[in-house]
Length: 278
Image (cartoon, rainbow, N blue to C red; front, side, top):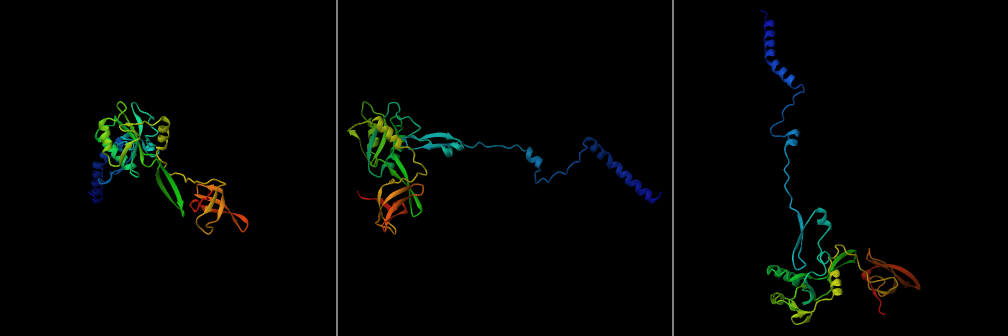
């Protein structure tokens, strides 16, 4: 046989062995078969097929510890950033069987006395006798030299307000000793052992003042147009003038000052002036 013919026969034989499998695959699936991706890297199809397991995220909550007890409530993301539970606003003025009383405390110790009483009330499980404990405060913002400072001022220094339940007009013995044995505590307003409840008008005003202070309070200026003032600092120190305009957003005032027989407007930071003596 011719060598070329033998080589051709061998090629045909090889082709005949491979072709039936390829044809069978072609008949079963006419679409081309893509190569399998390496084992070390997942293909997009495999990534989509893998089920995603989501873990439950604990619900956010807020805890208020300024009312004689802790209040926890679940919040969603929007509520957590925009809403805050305020015991002075979100709870009724009076709760069943309880009244409000004024307790004298050491000056500048109002917050520490409140916090200590709250812990003791929770430990002794006396929340059914003592409720909210309030220390009304106000945040103020000042501007000086272009720098702002936020300070928190107590509206009733030397006093805190206690929501409490009496028995026959008297403080229960366990409550009496719990309060009296707290450092910095004085007496309740009223006679010994029989504190005088606050009137509804007083309670309403106290709770209004006890609202959570604003995070970004406005600058409060004690001046009004027409007020006579004296300049305390700057090139016009000791000059007297009249408030022409108040600019609380800038923390400034415009003062009309008489210079060489003529009135001239000068803009000053509010701390640079003071009300003139009458």
